[in-house]
Amino acid sequence: EPVDVLKALEFHNSPEGVTRTAGFCTNRRNSKGSDVAYRVSKTAQLSAPTKQLYPDGGFPEDFSILMTVKPKKGIQSFLLSIYNEQGIQQVGVEVGRSPVFLFEDQNGKPAPEDYPLFRTVNIADGKWHRVAISVEKKSVTMIVDCNKKTTKPLDRSDKTVVDTNGITVFGTRILDEEVF
Image (cartoon, rainbow, N blue to C red; front, side, top):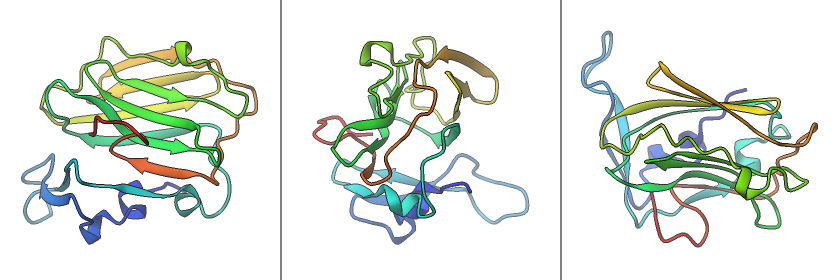
């Protein structure tokens, strides 16, 4: 089942530091007004137990993350971070001039120096972007705006486990100064 991170973190209830704004499409057919987007300020503290996102059990071994984002120009910060019970970041999506996909399985693989960096992709240009990150077996693919596709190796264990007993954080990492 798909997980709607915005719903799980209750964006619709306008938590502190989150405001509704016009989204990607200002005039979509068969609907009134523009798409809804959320502006996240530095004061926002958005997190939830990962079990709240995955109540039926484990995090999938192969998965995709889909997002429509409009980062500030020049920013480089984490949009999504999933930590295990011991506080180790196991999954992370860093958006910016050179997006990074952070993944660390139960065996500590891959090592930080082997995290996939997407140097040829800049999504921190102040414009809207549709981004898909898809993890399958030992590779990760990033597709930006439905056409720019980049695949990188992901040196992870054969049977990976992402611990759902930890916490999921939106817009930053624990102890980071920079926020999305």
